Amino acid sequence: MSKNDDRDAVWNSVGEFIRAQREMANLSLRQLADIAKISNPYLSQIERGLHKPSADVLKNLASALKISAETMYTQAGLLDQAAGDQSPRTGPGVEESIRMDARLSTDQKETLVRIYRGFVERS
Image (cartoon, rainbow, N blue to C red; front, side, top):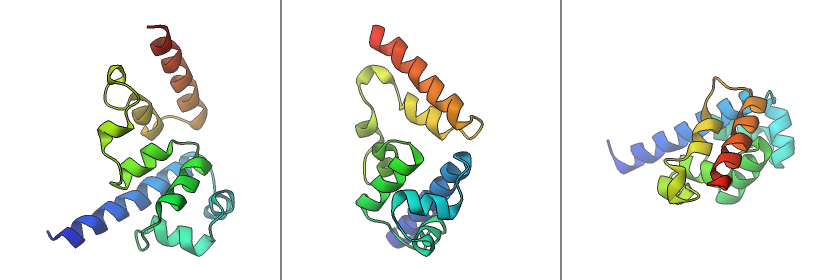
């Protein structure tokens, strides 16, 4: 596989990740586009891996989806996984793992993250 094929696979993966996060947040394509301040067609192209969004667009999407920009940048290969970790004691992205678990609702994810932070802040 060539470098271009690798990058295309990354952007396809980013699009799938954004779509999954949007669906978990129960947002339509139009709703997410409005919240992130981007156009409908542009978001559709991103989700299908046809367009490579800028870091600013990824940040807006992350904010709209209530996930960290670091998580989005890591998905896009713009940030190393280790760089997204908050401290050496957090392990391999505990909060990111919670947020990416498709089996949990948005409320469950937020609750688990709050509980997790409460435990680690006491240590």
